[in-house]
Structure formats: structure tokens, C-alpha cells
Amino acid sequence: MKKKDICIGMVLAIAAIVVVVMLEELFNLGYTLKTVIKVVAFMGSIVLYSGLTHKKFVEVIRLRKIKNIKPILISMAIFFVGTALAFLIFRRFIDLNNIRQSLIAKENLTRSNCLFVFAYIIVCNSFLEESFFRGYINGIFKSKKLGAIISAILFSIYHIGIFVTWFNPFIFIICMAGLTGVGLFLQWLSNKFESILASYITHACANVVINIIGALIIFEVI
Image (cartoon, rainbow, N blue to C red; front, side, top):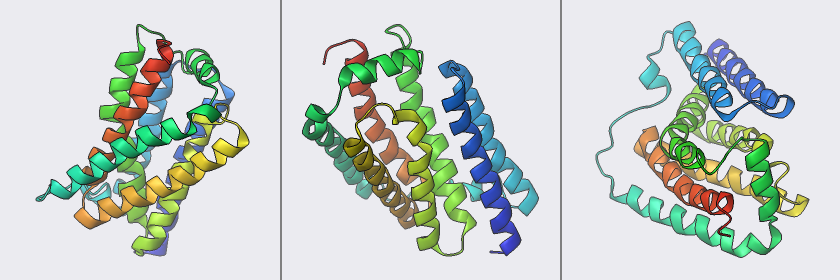
């Protein structure tokens, strides 16, 4: 990997993350507009990198077929159960009403649109994030270990703007560490199967649990 390509890739990636996070924090944008901005920023940086380095888009994001899906099914089950258990363990430390108010005020979620939004997050947003973090950013570096560490850290930092007001400092630190660990595991999956489809399917499965919890919060079931 040429140093020039690494510099181009990191500048474009960090610029995309900064744009998305800054708009998230500085402006009270509707969820649809924020989503469009995120898609344009993330995919735009990948397309620019692909063009500037003369690499195929599908190769930049490592979108390849998977032959053996059985191990991925195991990882899906682990993430599904693990996410649910994590919520049950730390629930007493979480102010669910604060999260509910944040989702309504900051994300503009309502009972009428939340199910559509959550479906988008599970199916589309998971793919977008895997393409960007596990495919594009990790692939910038020749060293898979270095790429995994940097992509996991940036993955964690990116989510700060989403839940920075949700939790107390203790839970916040746990979330950041947990997200970094999740990023490393998803990267390991992507590297092992040489395709983001492996990490995408697992990521989507975890988001199923997270958004079920989100729906229960919005509808005030919990």
C-alpha cells in the first residue's frame, strides 16, 4: 500500500466522520436528512478514494461472496444473546426515560416512524457502516492488525455523538470500550471470511436486539 493512498484514504475517512458527527451535535436535523448526509459522506469518501487510487469500489469495501455461512450463524447467535444480556445486566444503571426523550427530541423518532427507522438501521445502516469501517478504512492499511485497531477506534468515536447524553460516565466508558471490542470482533470476522458480508450479517443481528429495545422504549413498554 502506497503512503500516498494511505494519506488520501485517512483524510477522506476522517473528514466524513467529522462532518457527520459535527452536524449531529451542532444542528437539530431530522433523522431523514441526517441519514442522507451520512450516506453521502461515507459513500462519497469511498467513491472518491476508489477513483483517486484506481481501485474497484467492490474491492475497496471488500464485498465478496461467502462460501461457508455456518460460523457466521454462530457469531450472529452470540451477538444476539450477548447484546440482550448486556442490556439486562446494565439496565439498572440506565435512565430509560432520558433515552426516550433523546430519541424523540434529537432523533425525531415517534411511534409512527420508529419501526421504519429501526428497519432501515438493521438492513441498510449496518451495511453502510460495515462498508465504511470494516471494508474501506481497514483496507487502507497493509497491516491488518493496524487497520483493525484504527477502524475499531474510529467506529467507537463515531458513535459518541449518538449516545453521549444517554448514560452516566461509568456506563459511557463501558459503551466506548464495548464498541471498540465489537469493532475488533467484526473486523476479525470480515478478515477471516475476506468479505464484509460476514461482519454485516452479524452487525445487523446485533442491531435487531438494539432496535427491539429501542422500540420498547419508544412505546413505553419498558
